[in-house]
Length: 383
Ligand SMILES: CC(C)(COP(=O)(O)OP(=O)(O)OC[C@H]1O[C@@H](n2cnc3c(N)ncnc32)[C@H](O)[C@@H]1OP(=O)(O)O)[C@@H](O)C(=O)NCCC(=O)NCCS
Image (cartoon, rainbow, N blue to C red):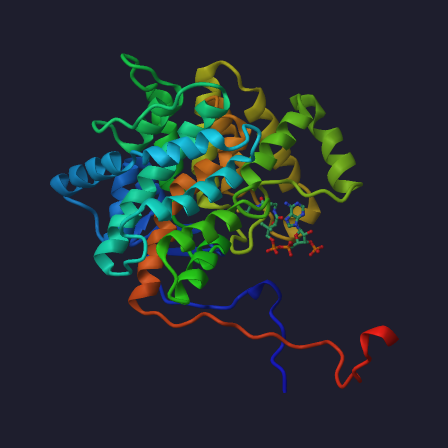
């Protein structure tokens, strides 16, 4: 007797994990015992990386060691930089990142070593290198030379420096603070689709780079990490706050579009990361002197939240909704939003990969066959 099909694996528990708790009913998120609100308020991204990889917060010396290790390992092999320069300048940045991370495995001496020590080294290296690749790519495609990461900076500072800096120019403090909070909020999120893909990949005994490449490919889709860029395209299409009501009526009520950045498989209450990012987006919009995009986002969210369709289905803004406004306000190109998500989530993917290896079993679900049976073979010239 066949088991009922669980489309989209909804409600299926596939692992035990100490990384994070996502409580969708109450809108709570916890990394290794710490609430996301506490971490967003206090933590450096490197502290969260240590927490997720080691299961506890670092002391001062451990934090400094990890910061320095990530900054040092962030330097790319010369062959990688040459490759980046050879990619088509109009390539989708997520396609670029997926290809570049796959190529990095071939320059990594630890690539095929699956020991715990090697996997920790690779987690640190990939976290640094992905940041450098993202910043280098944005410069290369705009015709500028990439900048090497600085060993004295933390990851958020290094990203802003490599993206916009030059010698003698310190990274902008407002952008650094926004990027750090964004990275902390996006670092980890239970058994999301890209983390699941990473775990499935390494559960076959494959390597960490392959797991991260699977994660990047999965994150790229608009139902997952691609939603932040899609949300911004939607706000740009709306254009002005006074267009929100008409846009909602035409596209959502009378059309069949979805509001990007709204809805979630697990959260049936407000995503706690969206609440934090809404505040950040508002503060950034006010301090930048341009509140238009925040106003559009806020009005659209309020319109949806007052609508019976959204109320009945418990559809609230998710992390990608207001993060689009935060990233746009600090002048990041829209197609770099999802690579930035990958810059954060690589920490979660690698934490899960390490956890999967520690207690591995092949992940191999089943399906219900609904095709025909017993067909007679017809030779090709008689079909
Ligand atoms: C995230 C998402 C893929 C979750 O999907 P899911 O759990 O499979 O939920 P479903 O697609 O089955 O949606 C459930 C219902 O809500 C509706 N719905 C879900 N998200 C919606 C949205 N953003 N706008 C309008 N309606 C939406 C669906 O049409 C469906 O309605 P129905 O029951 O009448 O068919 C979905 O909410 C979505 O597409 N959101 C927009 C993309 C996005 O922001 N993704 C980032 C997630 S962090």
